[in-house]
Length: 214
Image (tube, rainbow, N blue to C red; front, side):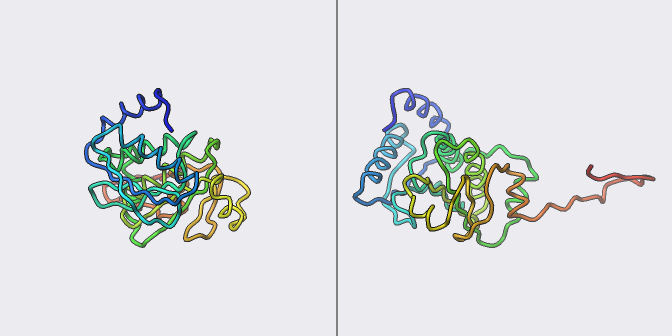
């Protein structure tokens, strides 16, 4: 499934893994399941820190990424190649112990979410705007056990796209209900799903005029 050049690049990244990662595979007998199994087996062969197990997921074919610490569920319903290969590699490293590179405020906002949240992002592998959304929600799931995220690859899940009337990607859903779509940043997604962090002004000195914000 992965060519030799891509394998060499991925093997170099996987040396950064700090802890073990288990990939949970949910498959059936169709051709897409065989391709996904080949993809995951190629990844497993590149690091002794990666193991595969069978797992029943809501989508098939699909796989989950499971680290050794407590985190939310991260699922790829499809083969994350094209623009989503980077999303897969980053999520793999993050569940393997690499700290996501986001601001302290963003981490605080993610960790402030106390209720269970189940997000899905329908993508196309050729979409330029999809990876940023997928990566942002995956980071949320890495940092907060209450958050789960599934990337749904549209071309092999056309029935879902039709059922949900998806006309463009990325299409973001929560509990199978449309939430938003189009180009998003981590900041704009947090504005959508999390509360704003209250600024502590207790240490400010007295001023005649104080402008907070723009």
